Amino acid sequence: MLPSKLKRSKLLAGSVVLLLMKMSFDAVITVDTNGVPTLQAQYENVIHEHLPGVETWTVTPVAFQIGSNAFFSFDVEAVSTTSTVKWIGIIDITKVSTA
Image 1 (cartoon, rainbow, N blue to C red):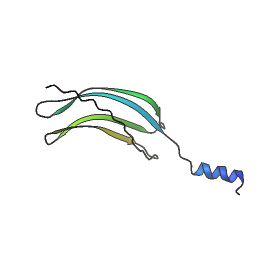
Image 2: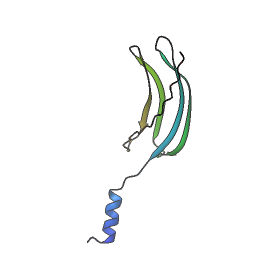
Image 3: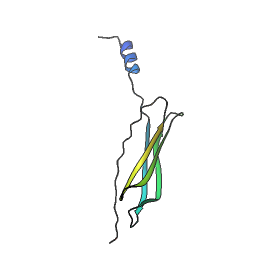
Image 4: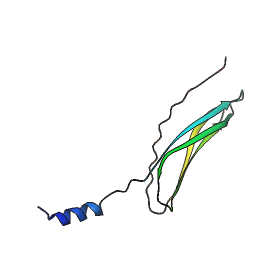
């Protein structure tokens, strides 16, 4: 059995610091008769942000077209010198169409 001081230092050396940015987006995207998508409006709500002062993380909604198909996604970017960033997104889409 290891002495308790050694156990603590070993845990600290292998510990992970959790940096968190939690936000929600509401976005309105329209698609015209040619299939061209347009981001009409967006609302961003930062719920929690715990980042080091030297880092910036951004999430931007974007509508785009490939061929004749309309797409919607998020561009994510992290400016970091020391962190490994993993993005997790939960998306709920409501489609409204006119006949």
